[in-house]
Image (cartoon, rainbow, N blue to C red; front, side, top):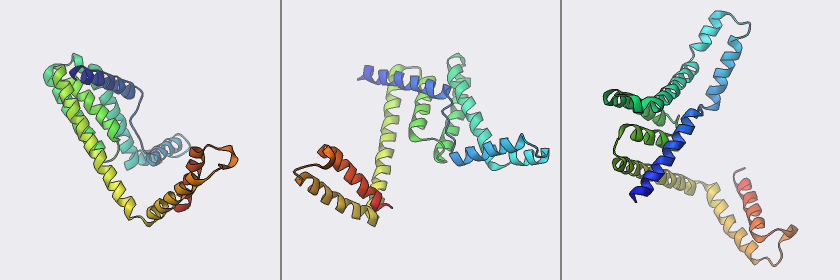
Length: 206
């Protein structure tokens, strides 16, 4: 069990290195477009005051802060092994607070956040057994969060009349296709059923 957990931890940390090194930090399309437009206008014929105003917008400030967060994360995971215990702990705490803030703001997905938190554990906990134990606790937390969100989504769907109508049509279509002696267009039964259900979903949510 311990060997398996440590092996998973090693793979996860490798994924962190690849993700952080590859510029993984998410940026919403609307905010990215805003910053791109600001940069494009600022390099044109606009006055310097216009450029300054664009760079002072909340979107531009948020973008620069996220870029700084990404650089901070890259430097920490690169340098952690060479830091003293106090400096490593302090920088890890700062990074963890930023991760909390971005996760709460919806700027990081659960998967990205978990990868970063596993990296923090690996960088700050020396004992491999304790690393594995903390990673398992973290995984349980995110599994519980995922189950809770899925239950909320299912509850919302059940209250949606379009979803209820679709589920009734789904049962009817499945029964109809299973009873067919010949499937049209030379399709397999599974493929034909998939196409029929896809059409019903599109119709229900049109």
